[in-house]
Length: 78
Image (cartoon, rainbow, N blue to C red; front, side, top):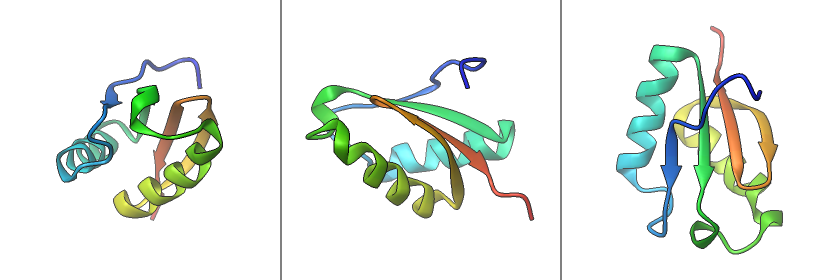
């Protein structure tokens, strides 16, 4: 998963509709997207897996990796 750079950053506002739209667009274009969360965007690292699950569900993707405050999502093959 280290082969791609984080192309979406989530700040204090969290997962807004705008951020989710950008993630969807990048998934369609690239098939994989790496999202980096600022520490202020979530309470704890332990919440990241749950946050990743909700985000993947919202954009119709699957979780490829969760490491610290970075999540990688992949487009679901149909």
